[in-house]
Image (cartoon, rainbow over all chains, first blue to last red; front, side, top):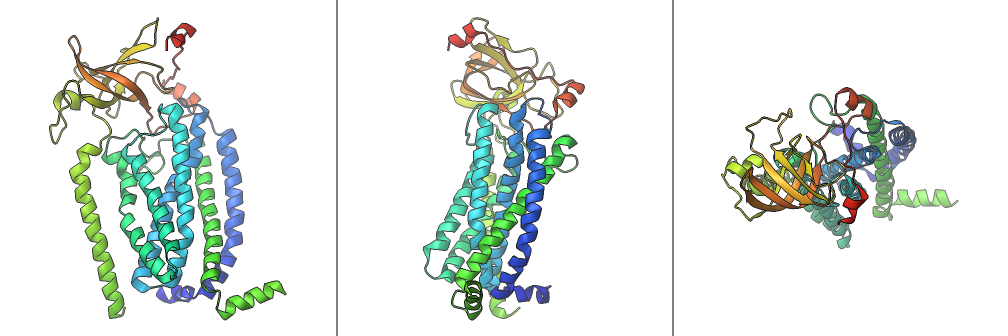
Length: 247
Length: 173
């Protein structure tokens, strides 16, 4: 596996890989999201208690689980950057952090908009909501550290340590609804065994979830590509690339 | 792996394990305090592990299921009272279960109905005929993780009717 992965530690190889991946991610994301969102927002049946308000579920749940997923991938990148000093891993972590922060914010805002009519409050300091808010602050801290240092290696190291320390928060978010009494409901989809949702509501969710994951792939590819170019701007291959484009 | 990498791997992993252990212990120590609410049985007989029991006059949050048939509305105003019992799955209501009566004045959230999970915020008080009660200043609905289309819910015998307020009732607030 190492032999197979090793060439991608080279920025030039990785740059071309993102170029190849990008169209796949973009087209698939467009297909899945347009099917999933139209299905979810227009055709899925309304919930027996919540009526149409429950449709925010189709944005809220993918955003929330992706906010955790992106954090875990960022932590894996930070770990390999600290241990094996792969410089590109820092670049990828820097590319992922703002995307994760945006999805965390989306999850918090949609959840709050749903909470007002359903629970009767915009915000409550229960374990799930509080730990998700901490996740947002962790992302903001990581972004700030990445841009706080002139020296990118130093910045990557500092941000990487914060990322790894923050990993503790991920299982807390995931299991908060099981460990403690919370106002937030338990998980619907990722429950072992049968999901607590009827199938004609679950299928659009699966499409939305895959669609949003691919969208994250698109945004991260774009940001990662820029990050590689910015960090290697003095290398000959980047100069060649620019000259080719301008001719 | 060369020795430097091995060393770094060891340092990073041990720091992570250390932080994990610290966080685990802190959360374990705090576990009772992170709970958002007391359940009715915890109010009457104390928390299971620590035996902590709220005292009369204390501001608490209570969470439980609305006992069917216990909701009493005042036709003239927005005053409402209902009983809460423990949330257990599958949902059953027994005669002898500890219940706490909640008194509230205001508009209830959309999801409020009998058998629904509710979190109420208020002061604990003694209420001679029924035992303990909570004078609530805020009532929140707790949604469960089940989502069902209307037809399916009707087939399963689940109904949800929104509370209908008369204009006079709404004018009192």
